[in-house]
Length: 222
Image (tube, rainbow, N blue to C red; front, top):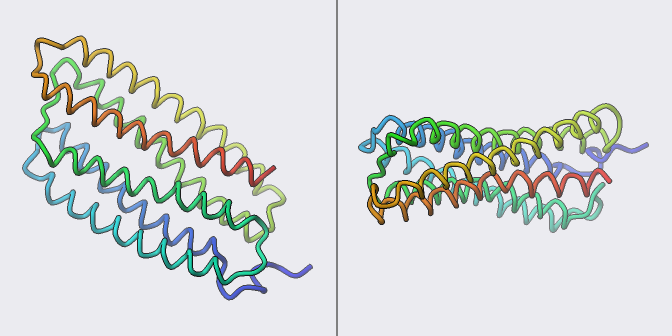
């Protein structure tokens, strides 16, 4: 049986991993930014935000190159449309990381003392879901190399189940944070509450990307 990697000079999933590595850099910087917010170090947010913008741009460059590569390959073990769907979803992690950075750069955001612990839970849940999504993408590259069979498939299936649980947990934590935030109406300024609502929504988008990735991967495995 001829292996796919012998047919092509470069596996498209090699490009996918190259792209997700750029995305992962965005997420690493986002984690630093969210920690700075939690510590009240707003003066350092701008510097970290610039790094996120830089890595997001680099991810876009790799994404465009990969799309060109995909247009040249004639034979693939899975539909090109599926690969592009995964690429779009994983690129969303970088895009949303940039969106969150921009929101925190618009206004100095202080965490209400009643929500300090809830903020930690929220950021941990959101970041964990996104990190697990990245881990899954890297595992999918291994599946490409072995032709989507064997123990690699079973391992990815387990990861997908774990990924779905993390996304659900992030949703629950986000909803709880929102309830407690709205309970502070009248105590916190309307502008602060409005900004936090926007931030929570966009952070939720980051976790939702994991669900999209999980759904795309299940279609491929089936």
